[in-house]
Amino acid sequence: MEPATPAPPAPHRVVVLALDGVLTFELGIPQRIFALPRDASGHSLYEVVTCSVREPGPVRTDADYAVLVEHGPEALATADTVLIPASQELGPLLEEGVLAPELAAALALVRPEARLVSICTGAFVLAAAGLLDGRPATTHWGYTALFRRLFPAVRLDPDVLFVDDGAVLTSAGVAAGLDLCLHLVRRDHGAAVANDVARRTVLPPHRDGGQAQYVRSPVPEPRASTTAAARRWALSRLHETIGLRELAARESMSVRTFTRRFRDEVGLSPGQWLVQQRVERARTLLETSDLPVDRIARDSGFGTAQSLRQHLQAAIGVTPTAYRRTFRAVGGGPGRG
Image (cartoon, rainbow, N blue to C red; front, side):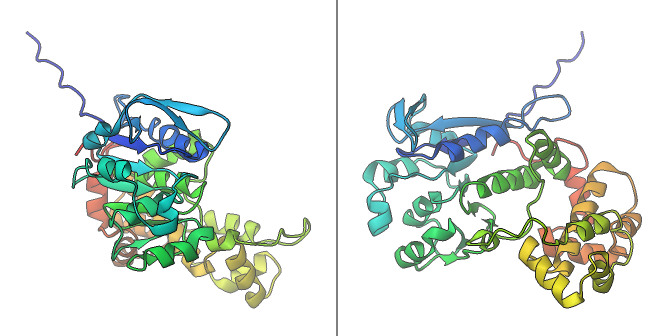
């Protein structure tokens, strides 16, 4: 008699809380991103469930239609991750920073070990529940002054696309929710899985900079020179020593002009951007190759294993060996709980 095939691990359950006035774009982000990742056997790594603070039924949106939500607040008690999209009908929450009774009752059902995530003004819900006190967080840049007035105990950073504070993660407005959900896939299952999701949804695996660069930014003249060619050139030579003068020369600019324009376009200095790209290259090689760490350090441009170790620790808090052990198998990472 052949041994029974072991059942696949239960997928990580993401419960999306749809409040009245929910923004339809943000509501669709979790399903679009988390429905795609699969393990090596083709099993889904996530399960997405949408719930309301009331009994199952229609929930108003910011559009000219409602959505029929088939789960009530009890679904929150089953969540491994609770995700709260933005809503245009937060009412007294945006005026006094206080949760409505039915919303407070719903959030009380969330397990202490569940991961908490917000998109855009969903951060107001987490803050009003006291879940962001003393933590770093972000929200849409247009709500910065109001957020700070209502929730002075939160360490608000208005200039980033998202903040990962371990068990609690917050994102800026609209498209930053895509950045954050892709980041969660990368954190849970590694760069190879996240990059596959990014390719399938035609998204950049990692967007540079922060939301500050998108606030009242003038549209550049069509013929204005950019730093894009220098970035493409650098990405093909990450294993080499790349100097600032060399990058500026690729665009026929002075170092000063190139540095200013680079930061305007990318939101980072050229040096910061190079380190970021080299970390991403190293992560991919650790996941997808059997190369020794010394070789990966050279191929990603860090030179030595010690330098790679220091930069990886600073970027994601783990050593190359620990990262490879966690994410070497495509589709590895945490399941439910």
